[in-house]
Length: 167
Image 1 (cartoon, rainbow, N blue to C red):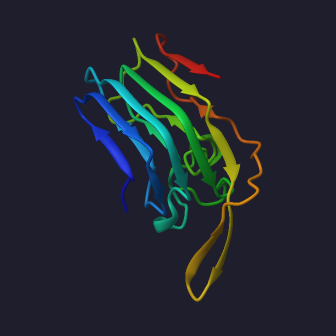
Image 2: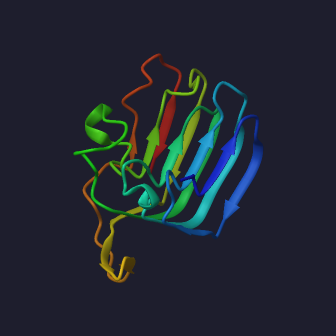
């Protein structure tokens, strides 16, 4: 029940490029920098499918940030199931941590965003089409349909200093 890739702690100048991650137990691309000087993190040209599937989508987002100074999320393609508003493990904000947004900014784990910049550029956020047969998930990633959920959710950090760039 883990993240796909999680840069945890004091990480600088790290790149994830051209990856495909599916069926995680939690978030797919995560930065857990807490209050450290975590910066120079780039996730790009990658695909994320069905965050949180291993926990029946009770938690998980394509991108999650738990504190950092600077990170870029560029040209990511996210296929997410419908937002779990009924029984998300983190029920704050109508369960947005359960695929409510492509990326989520969380205040937990001593996160400090007082001088932070996050860039979300060229990302695509699609509704996931899936069926189940014999206990296995079957995905259809053809002809994707954009979902109507936000690219980024930040409903927790209100102390200033955080800049989020979305294009």
